[in-house]
Image 1 (cartoon, one colour):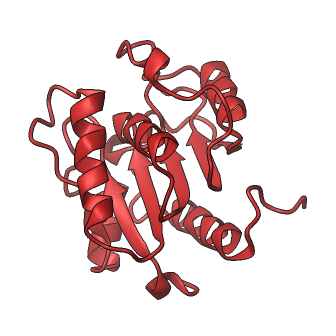
Image 2 (spheres, helix red, strand yellow):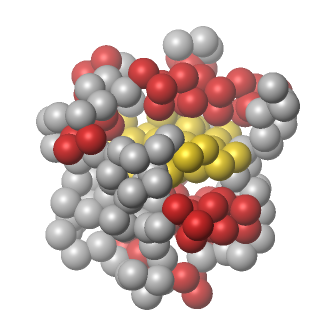
Length: 186
């Protein structure tokens, strides 16, 4: 996948972690160098604790880092990177959870993120309505992609190795290498 070997890739699951059939877990099997950020309590997400754990993981390696986040992991990544952007080359935010459902909206930035980001959302995601996802993506300056009705873009979505998601990670890599924040217009 391009020059991905020059980057560290952190996989950041959401609530209940990502099981073996989830695309994040499948990607880790495809790309053994991808590292999962483990949380102490996968069943009770707390933004301060989860983002502190991500901060610790980020501090262990100085290579430029791409973060592949899902659900509450997206909120964790955004909070961490907004507080300390150093070393993060880009964020792939998939099926972000609604910050209001978790009472963490006030802890998240209202302005653009300091690195390239791509937010991928589903038109029937039960964890965040599409218009809300588009609004958060706009606030954060993220390139926004509506993938249609794929639920929460998880194992139940039946995505397998999710080739489209892998292609978007490649786009993010290209953005990080070029210094752009958004893909070039088609």
